[in-house]
Image (spheres, rainbow, N blue to C red):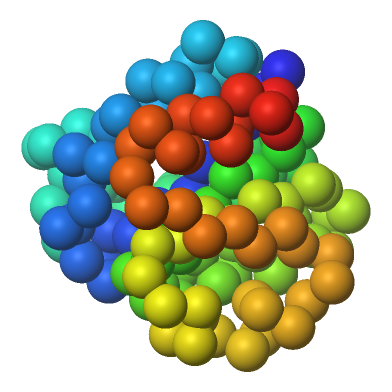
Length: 134
């Protein structure tokens, strides 16, 4: 199974450690195409050694290849929203995970019946959710 994990970069890296834990768990289920999102070396500047065009084209290709998209949407991110839009147009299965109050999640995410939007409280719950889905 090819898994596309989406997590905030430019929107904020405060959850980078959590992303790593999620990615590590996802790697037990399949090939995580975006495992670099869990690296501490990725700052809010993003992948500074690559051009925006390269990143865009690579990520679109990964979305096309993926069997499922897992998006951690707690931190608002234009990039994640774009990725979800592309994945929706590609008819991918999309799981959006978030912590905190549902009201803070965009209505464009909450109102899209093609997405599974799931609230969680911590990494153990995320692992359980992912085990059931995958």
